[in-house]
Image 1 (cartoon, rainbow, N blue to C red):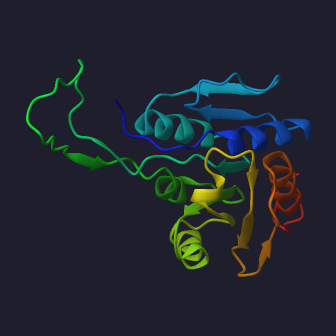
Image 2: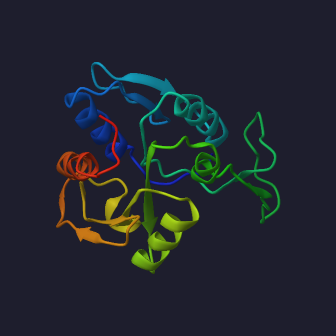
Length: 193
Protein backbone atom coordinates (compact mmCIF):
# COMPACT_ATOMS: atom_id res chain seq x y z
CA UNK A 1 0.00 0.00 0.00
CA UNK A 2 1.30 3.42 -0.82
CA UNK A 3 0.18 6.97 -1.45
CA UNK A 4 0.90 8.10 -4.97
CA UNK A 5 -0.63 9.28 -8.20
CA UNK A 6 -1.07 8.01 -11.74
CA UNK A 7 1.90 9.92 -13.12
CA UNK A 8 3.91 7.66 -15.41
CA UNK A 9 7.01 9.84 -15.72
CA UNK A 10 6.62 9.88 -19.51
CA UNK A 11 6.91 13.67 -19.77
CA UNK A 12 10.18 13.71 -17.82
CA UNK A 13 11.59 10.89 -19.92
CA UNK A 14 10.54 12.67 -23.13
CA UNK A 15 12.32 15.84 -21.96
CA UNK A 16 15.45 13.84 -21.08
CA UNK A 17 15.42 12.14 -24.48
CA UNK A 18 14.96 15.40 -26.40
CA UNK A 19 17.63 17.23 -24.38
CA UNK A 20 20.08 14.38 -24.95
CA UNK A 21 19.39 14.50 -28.69
CA UNK A 22 20.31 18.21 -28.62
CA UNK A 23 23.71 17.41 -27.11
CA UNK A 24 23.01 18.08 -23.43
CA UNK A 25 24.51 16.09 -20.58
CA UNK A 26 21.29 14.94 -18.94
CA UNK A 27 20.78 13.77 -15.37
CA UNK A 28 17.35 12.18 -14.95
CA UNK A 29 16.05 11.88 -11.39
CA UNK A 30 13.22 9.36 -11.47
CA UNK A 31 11.07 7.10 -9.31
CA UNK A 32 9.41 5.15 -12.11
CA UNK A 33 11.85 2.27 -12.34
CA UNK A 34 12.10 2.67 -16.11
CA UNK A 35 15.44 2.42 -17.84
CA UNK A 36 16.90 5.77 -18.79
CA UNK A 37 17.31 6.57 -22.48
CA UNK A 38 20.78 5.64 -23.77
CA UNK A 39 23.27 8.37 -22.94
CA UNK A 40 21.24 9.76 -20.03
CA UNK A 41 22.50 9.50 -16.45
CA UNK A 42 19.76 8.02 -14.26
CA UNK A 43 19.52 8.79 -10.54
CA UNK A 44 16.86 6.42 -9.16
CA UNK A 45 14.92 7.54 -6.08
CA UNK A 46 12.00 6.09 -4.13
CA UNK A 47 10.67 9.02 -2.11
CA UNK A 48 10.00 12.74 -2.45
CA UNK A 49 12.73 13.38 0.13
CA UNK A 50 15.28 11.41 -1.92
CA UNK A 51 14.19 13.26 -5.05
CA UNK A 52 14.69 16.57 -3.25
CA UNK A 53 18.24 15.64 -2.24
CA UNK A 54 19.13 14.35 -5.73
CA UNK A 55 17.79 17.45 -7.46
CA UNK A 56 19.61 19.82 -5.09
CA UNK A 57 22.86 17.91 -5.68
CA UNK A 58 22.44 18.02 -9.48
CA UNK A 59 21.47 21.71 -9.40
CA UNK A 60 25.00 22.78 -8.49
CA UNK A 61 26.32 22.03 -11.99
CA UNK A 62 23.14 22.55 -14.03
CA UNK A 63 22.43 25.22 -16.62
CA UNK A 64 18.81 24.12 -16.97
CA UNK A 65 16.46 22.34 -14.57
CA UNK A 66 13.24 20.82 -15.93
CA UNK A 67 10.91 19.80 -13.09
CA UNK A 68 8.27 17.59 -14.69
CA UNK A 69 7.84 15.18 -11.77
CA UNK A 70 4.42 14.91 -10.16
CA UNK A 71 5.73 14.67 -6.61
CA UNK A 72 3.22 13.84 -3.89
CA UNK A 73 2.54 16.81 -1.61
CA UNK A 74 2.06 14.60 1.46
CA UNK A 75 3.55 11.41 2.85
CA UNK A 76 2.61 9.23 5.83
CA UNK A 77 4.09 10.48 9.10
CA UNK A 78 4.79 6.89 10.15
CA UNK A 79 5.77 4.13 7.77
CA UNK A 80 4.89 0.57 8.61
CA UNK A 81 7.58 -2.02 7.84
CA UNK A 82 4.81 -4.62 7.58
CA UNK A 83 1.38 -4.92 6.10
CA UNK A 84 -1.24 -3.10 8.16
CA UNK A 85 -3.76 -5.80 9.03
CA UNK A 86 -7.49 -5.27 8.93
CA UNK A 87 -8.88 -4.17 12.23
CA UNK A 88 -11.31 -1.41 12.98
CA UNK A 89 -13.60 -0.27 10.19
CA UNK A 90 -11.64 2.98 9.97
CA UNK A 91 -7.95 3.67 9.57
CA UNK A 92 -6.63 7.14 10.22
CA UNK A 93 -3.46 8.26 8.46
CA UNK A 94 -1.36 11.12 9.75
CA UNK A 95 0.15 12.87 6.73
CA UNK A 96 2.99 15.40 6.65
CA UNK A 97 4.11 17.73 3.86
CA UNK A 98 6.87 16.53 1.57
CA UNK A 99 9.75 18.88 0.76
CA UNK A 100 8.82 21.55 -1.78
CA UNK A 101 11.64 20.94 -4.24
CA UNK A 102 10.88 23.91 -6.51
CA UNK A 103 10.68 26.31 -3.56
CA UNK A 104 14.08 25.14 -2.36
CA UNK A 105 15.52 25.44 -5.88
CA UNK A 106 14.26 29.05 -6.04
CA UNK A 107 16.42 29.87 -3.01
CA UNK A 108 19.53 28.06 -4.27
CA UNK A 109 19.58 28.70 -8.00
CA UNK A 110 22.56 30.56 -9.39
CA UNK A 111 22.25 33.57 -11.67
CA UNK A 112 21.72 32.43 -15.24
CA UNK A 113 20.29 29.01 -14.38
CA UNK A 114 17.01 28.37 -16.17
CA UNK A 115 14.33 26.65 -14.10
CA UNK A 116 11.15 25.23 -15.60
CA UNK A 117 8.29 23.88 -13.53
CA UNK A 118 5.13 22.01 -14.37
CA UNK A 119 1.69 22.76 -12.96
CA UNK A 120 -0.62 19.77 -13.13
CA UNK A 121 -3.96 21.13 -12.01
CA UNK A 122 -7.58 20.00 -11.97
CA UNK A 123 -9.10 23.48 -11.61
CA UNK A 124 -8.00 27.07 -12.09
CA UNK A 125 -5.23 25.88 -14.40
CA UNK A 126 -3.82 29.17 -15.68
CA UNK A 127 -4.36 31.13 -12.47
CA UNK A 128 -2.71 28.48 -10.31
CA UNK A 129 0.13 28.05 -12.80
CA UNK A 130 0.82 31.81 -12.88
CA UNK A 131 0.89 31.90 -9.07
CA UNK A 132 3.37 29.02 -8.99
CA UNK A 133 5.51 30.69 -11.68
CA UNK A 134 5.89 33.83 -9.57
CA UNK A 135 6.13 32.18 -6.14
CA UNK A 136 8.87 29.78 -7.29
CA UNK A 137 10.69 32.40 -9.42
CA UNK A 138 10.54 30.21 -12.54
CA UNK A 139 11.58 31.16 -16.06
CA UNK A 140 8.76 29.09 -17.53
CA UNK A 141 5.90 26.99 -16.26
CA UNK A 142 4.16 24.29 -18.25
CA UNK A 143 0.49 24.16 -17.30
CA UNK A 144 -1.51 21.03 -17.97
CA UNK A 145 -4.71 19.38 -16.82
CA UNK A 146 -3.67 16.53 -14.52
CA UNK A 147 -6.72 14.46 -15.49
CA UNK A 148 -5.71 14.47 -19.16
CA UNK A 149 -1.94 14.26 -18.77
CA UNK A 150 -1.23 11.67 -16.09
CA UNK A 151 -0.76 8.19 -17.50
CA UNK A 152 -1.33 9.39 -21.07
CA UNK A 153 1.07 9.33 -24.01
CA UNK A 154 -0.19 12.76 -25.06
CA UNK A 155 -0.37 16.14 -23.37
CA UNK A 156 -2.06 19.48 -24.02
CA UNK A 157 -0.10 22.28 -22.38
CA UNK A 158 0.11 26.02 -22.05
CA UNK A 159 3.55 27.56 -21.62
CA UNK A 160 3.60 30.63 -19.37
CA UNK A 161 6.82 32.64 -19.42
CA UNK A 162 8.24 34.86 -16.67
CA UNK A 163 7.58 37.97 -18.77
CA UNK A 164 3.85 37.12 -18.85
CA UNK A 165 3.39 35.91 -22.41
CA UNK A 166 1.99 32.45 -22.99
CA UNK A 167 1.62 29.89 -25.74
CA UNK A 168 -0.93 27.09 -26.00
CA UNK A 169 -0.17 23.81 -27.73
CA UNK A 170 -2.81 21.40 -29.04
CA UNK A 171 -2.90 17.79 -27.81
CA UNK A 172 0.43 16.32 -28.93
CA UNK A 173 2.56 13.27 -28.21
CA UNK A 174 4.68 13.98 -25.12
CA UNK A 175 7.86 13.70 -27.20
CA UNK A 176 6.63 16.57 -29.39
CA UNK A 177 5.61 18.63 -26.35
CA UNK A 178 9.13 18.11 -24.96
CA UNK A 179 10.72 19.17 -28.26
CA UNK A 180 8.63 22.35 -28.42
CA UNK A 181 9.42 23.23 -24.78
CA UNK A 182 13.15 22.95 -25.50
CA UNK A 183 12.75 24.98 -28.71
CA UNK A 184 11.15 27.81 -26.72
CA UNK A 185 13.82 27.63 -24.00
CA UNK A 186 16.64 27.82 -26.54
CA UNK A 187 15.03 30.96 -27.96
CA UNK A 188 15.07 32.80 -24.61
CA UNK A 189 17.51 35.72 -24.67
CA UNK A 190 19.23 34.84 -21.36
CA UNK A 191 19.85 31.16 -22.07
CA UNK A 192 23.26 29.52 -21.69
CA UNK A 193 25.11 28.42 -24.80
